[in-house]
Length: 603
Image (tube, rainbow, N blue to C red; front, side):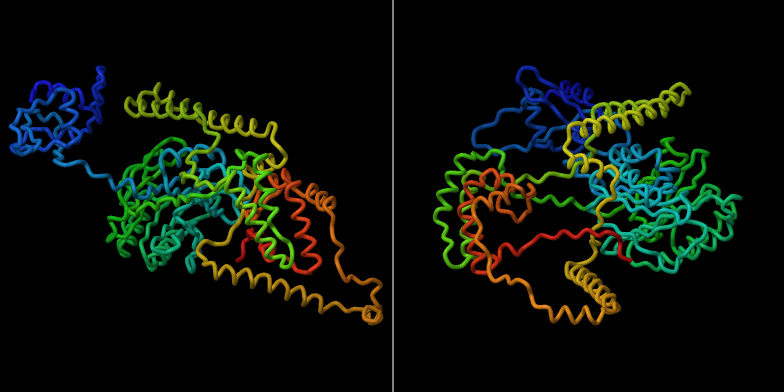
């Protein structure tokens, strides 16, 4: 092998990855740093991966001595003479293994000092920093700020908002991916008066995440440090008894970087007594102190790693990030079946439907007639609108209103930030501040333009849906931790109690004795003995005046049914008249799909 040529190729590819384009229909050369470092000097022979060997051979950089026919294939091993120019890096004699840390949960805490004026920035940070669980403190949100809550929650995420009772300042919010199934657990016997706290657990209760926000003592709130230390001791004692893994994080407003201070010393003593330790080092506040922390059990050091602080200057606190060594659950991607009615040949479908409905008989049992009717329609649909299976798609990671301007503004902000952090020049700091303001303006403009264009020319239903998504409260659903049996009994009990209450109120009403007697002695003025058969014109009028709404139990969408009313009408009129004359309602029409929507939470 020509080592001079290989040396030249190596020095060209000393970045993270390298790609050499060959113009004369030759393959491209793409190596990782680990593969190239495998060729550094060694007394042992190094084995080239198969794809590396083939690329070197195709590019003419590797020359093999010819061998006699029938001889054994020699191992692809070469003696490396490339000098080691990357100090401190060890060679990898095999293909690099996949980094398992990418599957860990990214957890972050951020004292945002009011989410009202940073809602889109918070959402943008969660998306592009790939955060799985974001804890926000000092949100300044209450239960009526649903618009802001919708803006800080990216697609595919959920938000738990815990406002400060009686005061809009403060507040805690937890934003997490849908697949994590986290719930807010009330903290029994852990009432505190000097700081806010919340306990978030997964549905299996194998993991508990406690978040704390302590307002700094002031003349306005009249909080005392001594009271806080007592409350903190009781809270640590409470969470220490929780089963499973535990992490406590938040804004403690304690100078963890000053261990000589009395309050910091007391907190460290309490943590050590219960077997906890604080992991965050370095400043988390713009004044240079470590006020935010991550607390874990000393015997669970492997639970959290890579604790970093991102001082992004958006708030007075930086974002505290860490990796939680829990495998990130994969989103459930389910394929759905559908019929593409938009591509249906309606003329051919009508002819096929007429032929098949001709064989449907309505004599005798109405249930049999309905089954045959549905079967005939399904057979025609299978020909002209067959069932298709959609490909599973991951959930949308960005809001729909993100555009190229947002991406350009984000890229410009990141470049300005890197330049300033490297140079620390005042001019670069000014450019960085301008790029942040520009990104915030671009985010607001992109969202406004998108929804303005969406509302123009939209139908009333579409306008209502868009406005409801922006300002309406999310639909409340039953807790995911309950089993279907428990939910069914809960709904049954709810409605049974409602009926009992109504009957109890009715029993209290005193009816007039005279009017009550008249109700029993007055003979009926008319009798209803049988139904009158309907005509095709009457049924056609009913179908035409009905709303164009569909249910998942419908055999065809309502708009398709109305388009082919003339084809369905003769046989459908016979089925309806058979049901009326026999007094039997078809069993298939007794089914319904009920989607419960809670009007308010049940305590």
